[in-house]
Image 1: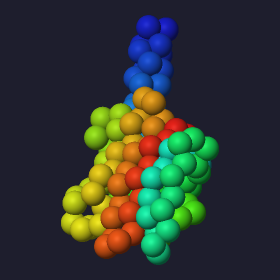
Image 2: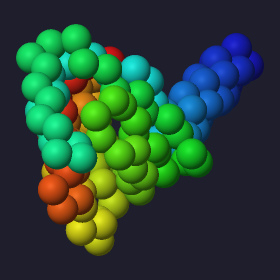
Image 3: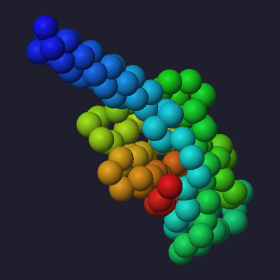
Image 4: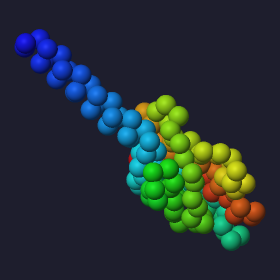
Length: 127
């Protein structure tokens, strides 16, 4: 009887752990949310900006798979994201202004390039 109870408890524990980990995978926006600090290179409204370290970008989850990225010296923009293993990537390149986007999960690193005409932002930073 004790063996059956232990086996049942083990199965329940594994099932709950699986549900929790799957739930996180279904919320890539939450995974990427936070404040990132790193290097920035950009051009906004004719002004060049370059910061080798200490530049901050904020990522806010708008829902389970959509984020908003804000910072000084560039227009805020939104990205649909999905989980690809440990990493989070843009869902598609349908946004003509988003040239590059990836969140590297095991390093808590965010990298993006956003270009809208003469305005461009390139960022690499850590959470």
